[in-house]
Length: 122
Image (tube, rainbow, N blue to C red; front, side):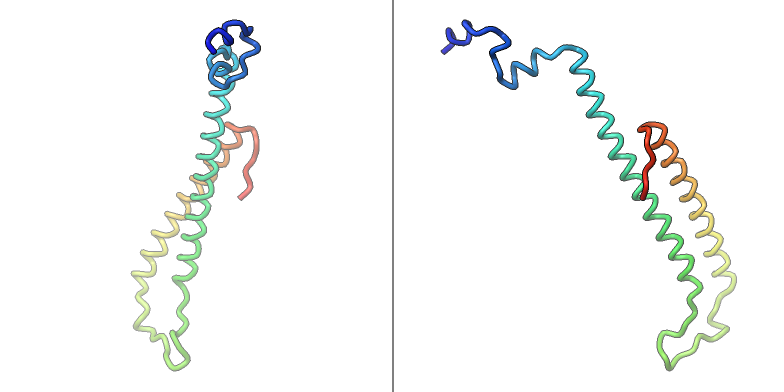
């Protein structure tokens, strides 16, 4: 068996191991670049999706904060039950978090476009 392999020219050996070992630097660099770029693009894409989800949740939380409708048809929301200072503080906090999330999402999208040469739509 070993003698059979010795008689073959290197280009006749078709195994994946040999092909992998005989790749030149350019091929190796291209393969590594493709792997790294693909991994980074997936990470950025996932980060943008997560940031978008976070922003939507914050916007919904702030909108729902002002739902003062009664819990059922037999109850009423009393004026003294509405704590204006607490609502103000929560609204301000949520608004700041929303703005930070918007900035983060904007930066992520700009970096994605710069790094990968295409826009992402989510």
